[in-house]
Length: 466
Image (cartoon, rainbow, N blue to C red; front, top):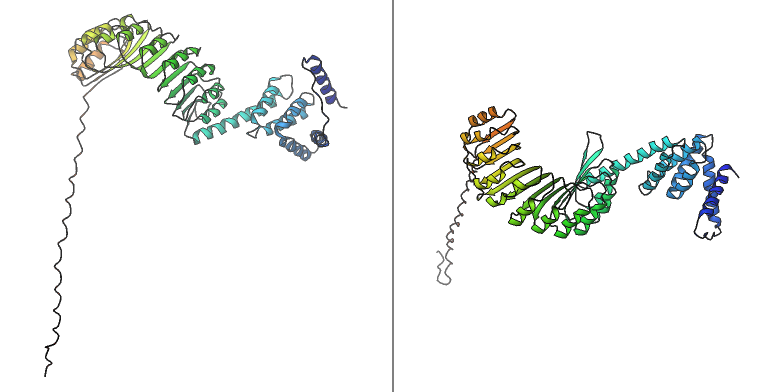
């Protein structure tokens, strides 16, 4: 009996002594099982052969046993000499080349790699890295062949983002990208089944879900994605689904590209967010009241159809920085802009509103403003000078106004940090394409007169020539 067998018996006895469960009944092994174990033992002995060909053949045969031999191989690594250990590590790596046994082989190599008392731990680490790289190549090939887009840090750097995922089975590949931080899901082929697969990727921090089949149940499961802190949703989600977001403990940034009701907004403002973006918020007195309670440090709103009273919440809003984009709001006048006076708005976009040059006096008091865009307004060069005290202003874009290039140069002289400033004329109307006249219908061909038939010869009185 060799040293390895003695050690094995000792371990077995120790486990039996400390086990609280009843000892299992040991059944007699069949002759076939005994023969198989003897054959395996013979292959292990051949690993010690001085002949290279014998060792290679033994390595191949043991690798062919697959997962059935992994436990035996790993246990022998810990009680043999360094050369024998390296042979065993090579066999485990060969077993890992098979997709069906790769995960088990990688787990074995990981345990050997973590055991720094083993002389072969460095070799196990190297083989483990090779198998991980094989997984990455296989995953990238599958994702790109199925329409997803994989983004790397540099030409051959780690993968940090995957977008265009449209099916659940694609999510199975994400676990192999150890630096993956951003994932985008879209399409009805993505269901609640993908959430546990995402949870295997512990590095994911940002997730975008657009028009998928993920339900309220799936949103509740997002709490299992351990490091998720940025979430973007586009689609039809109920108030119950929005309520489930509070289970995501690390969530700090939320983007909702969909219509939000008053009830849903009431749930959102209770989340401990640092950044909140809403694109389809319908203004009402209740919504204005709720917006004053937003605790997010950064608030971004895209609003349409705003009236003067729809901005009365801005001055008392708790957000440190506010980004406002107001589109197609002809009933928003200079009086409504007065609610922005001395506010925390740092970016303001006004498109097709009812403001005049008087509104620039109020905007000139918004000392935190860094970006301003105005279109379809009668403001001119003189009114633009009301902005001269906005020393933090970096960007200024004016479209379809009365401001000229000379006015832009004058305000740039007053604000040295204003690096980007332009005035754009109104877009030229697109001339309708000329409609080609329909070709005249062809005239019907004139009917040809029927050919006259020769008269039939008369019968009876015909005289023969004499």
